[in-house]
Image (tube, rainbow, N blue to C red; front, side):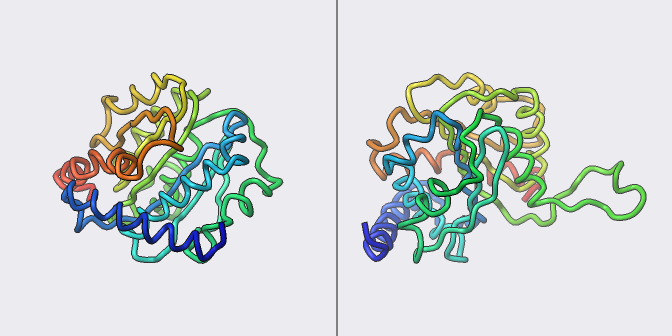
Length: 240
């Protein structure tokens, strides 16, 4: 698909996203959007077969509705985490090929969830300066909302660290939408969805067996369910 056709596709998808946004009363919701995608070994074929390119285009379309900077922030993870360039309408059509498939720094390793969650916390946090900084917890840099789409196809190897990372992130204006794709079960992600000990419920989990076949409207509904609930709870807790 040419870059021009990809751009048109994303703009058309954005109209579908807008329909779902209106149904869920999120027309006024604005947020920084970050896409966090699994690049563990089991995911590689989804990238080489073009499935993930389609996913990036669908997420990009949603980002255009929530974030007015016209781009989508991206990072990928396996046992570590790697920042990728922001995607724009002008380059989205070749984004996966250029930045993931042909990226020699991606090792296609195991699956750890905590590193990207901690990195997001650090992106939205500030630490006190001076001698006592090392003894102080990071605090939110602002109350501007951040919406994270976190996609994975398998369970992780760092459950305790992931739990702690999500608990820490609950004090920040960050909502995490966990997407578990494929035929695997995701007991860890199910637990994260209902886990105690958080300032607010800052996550929702959705299992999608075949992300290539799910309709655009259903995908956007899955991506957006509970966002409004989080926004209200975060405002009540003065996180937003």
